[in-house]
Image (cartoon, rainbow, N blue to C red; front, side, top):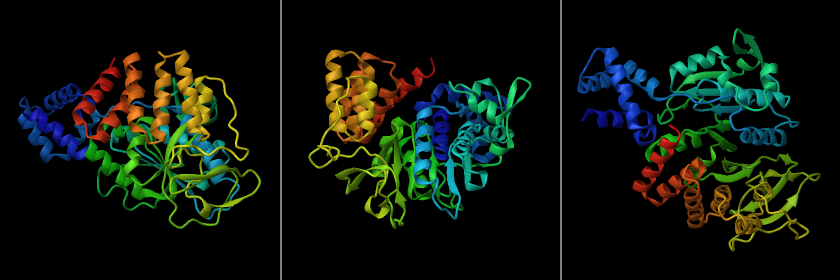
Amino acid sequence: MSYPEIENLLRRKIGIDAKIINSRKITKAVETRSSICGVSNVDNYLQILHTSNQEFDELVELIVVPETWFFRDNQPYHALTNYVRSQWLNKPHNRKLRLLSVPCSTGEEPYSLAMTLLNLGLLPTQFHIDAVDISKKSLAKAKKGIYSRNSFRSQNLEFQTRYFIPVDKEYQICDQVKNTVNFSQGNLIDSQFLIDKKSYDIIWCRNVLIYFDSPSRKITLKNLNGLLKSGGIIFFSASEIGELANLGLEIVRLNGVFLGQKKIANPANVSLNYPLVVVRDNNIQDIKEYTKQPINVAEIPLFLLENCRSNNNQIIQSQDGAIKKHDYNLDTIRNLADEGNLTAAISQCQNYLQTDFTNAEAYVLLGQIYQAQKLESKAEECFQKAVYLDPQNSQALLHLTLLKEQRGDITRANILRQRWQRLHQL
């Protein structure tokens, strides 16, 4: 009976959910480490885990397998670019822009953040990136900064020529990028996680919460929220954004990416030149295009284009009262939603489905828009249809999992997580 006890030990110490990681993988890792330790009885190996932090770390290394590459999923980096360009560049600052990348794995994500900022024209002295991971082996590779072709999977590899030096069949990242990132080991569910660090303007934490059990996700979110500056933003993956609902963060959307923004407690008098949705108490009061006239941050708790709704679920339109007509295709519908016109986006998506009622992607999009309006039951129905039409739709499965968990249907949520895990093992 020691295998379940080992799974519980892993859950308590690093937060992973064995149902997601896969119990068979954990069993295989335990067998491998037991053999190396020279014990044949799993009960004896469990005793070693209780007494040896080094052995526990070795087991974790076999379970936490890094899967990442440079500029993985371009959209979040486009959102980061627009955020920094509109909120940081060309404005006087007496301090560095501070970023946290966690978990940083083998370094591709924090280095991608650094390259994004350098491409924008920031000097290495104008920003600081802390990168944290639980894996010592991953951190060692990240600090070394040498990568194989597997780390370069994006379509545009211009950055490879600009920031890397060929070394045999691999690539060494240049010192200009390497020196902007500070790597360290840390555990996201540790109550003392980065407690000695200054707060961050931007936190990048994507594709990790889905592997944690519910209590560990809550601890992680609490820790990250404590590290985020007032007005700062945090990046999660689309499947994880629902976790922000109970954290007190505002959910915003920029360049098709959902972000969490910490409410501005004591807003400074900073002028913004950005298309804004002015929001008070989560209700849209007005929409204006501030392209020439500056506005005081104190007037708006949210300074990014948002997906919010008024009390009667009606989105207030632009100043001229008109919403432009769009063809019924998913890209224009997505753009309409990104602009904050959720009601119009829903209408067009429904019309689209009348002509293509078996399109799983359209149901996923409609479900995401319903989620932005906090209409969880309608969103769940859309994600269920998407899974029915496409049983291997990873995004729909993850959205459904989070919705089930939020409603307290843990049994069904665990089944969905297992389906998602099997899908990624194919």
